[in-house]
Image (tube, rainbow, N blue to C red; front, side):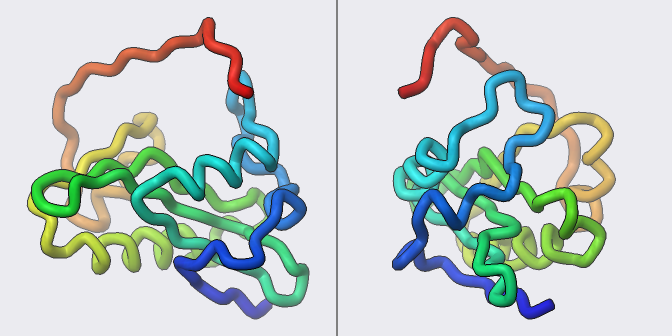
Length: 136
């Protein structure tokens, strides 16, 4: 397996994103919508499987570049989990955001230990989720 990590979307098409991302989501994004989210965020990192010619993991960030950053998504395809890809994506994003004092994300309880390994800690918050909006 040869994984290349990149922050470039040059040459990435929806076909590179057809591996089954958004597992367990009520309304998973299409590969076309997924590519739009990657292009619309402040930054992203991809794990690209050279042999298979596909993106097998990604992480996105939204930031003001000074004070705060939010990581809305990090995901690795099921067949590629347990190989350190998610850890490498997260580590690289933390390095990229090293000068930003406030880094936030939302996660389910079962993955808190993953983030705790990087020094993150639980903190209360509020969210608003609009489930009545149809994505185009």
